Image (cartoon, rainbow, N blue to C red):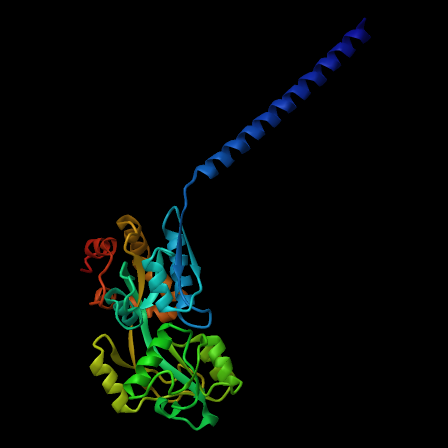
Length: 337
């Protein structure tokens, strides 16, 4: 009898343990299902910023801005994509293909006014969030070419940037201001910074023209691997450009920016802007601007080309296009406007 009782007790204990195990497993599955459900219910707004080619300055600038936004704006995921540059960015931002883009102020002006290459196009649905840096006209050749001035490149093979990029639009402007018929006055090659500088390195092009922050990655690589020099302007050409276009300003590329550059090179520049589609909500524009402005030191630490953003007057200074209302709201709250 004692043996039977002991057997019954043992069976009962096994059944109890199995039941507890099943209950535990059921509890674990329920918990996991709840976590998955909560995750699936979390709403994330996906934004896309159009930048430039990876060898230029727009792409790393966009990467730095996206990181700040992703780290500081709850519920927002900002992605970046490559493009041919300012003109594409302005068009794609205006028509809503992307929510944000990086665009030089001269291209933005042509976009909203339907002038230049934007004549007859309806691309005016863009607003400024903040300027990021000054885009600087710069061109590089090999020292062995014997060329000192951009005027000396007429009739030769020149990389002018990707078609309709800010660099190519400025190449058009510069040669036209010289009195030349662009693009017939040169053998134009429509290459991004990296490919254009490789073409110079390989002797396929005599020079590459760029328009952006400095140093440009592709040009820095060219100066690191070859004996390269920046081209200069004849003063008459430069002064004509400045007189004809009020949004450009005279500036210089400091000595030491590129390997072997032992003197400042005088050139011209314009502000480069972070723009948004005009239909982006005021709240979203406000949150993006707030995140960027309140983390400017971290932004510049990640990309020194953005150092001008530390200057309040630079950020809220006059622009040729309107600020987004959400940006204006933040700047007024912060006492910047």
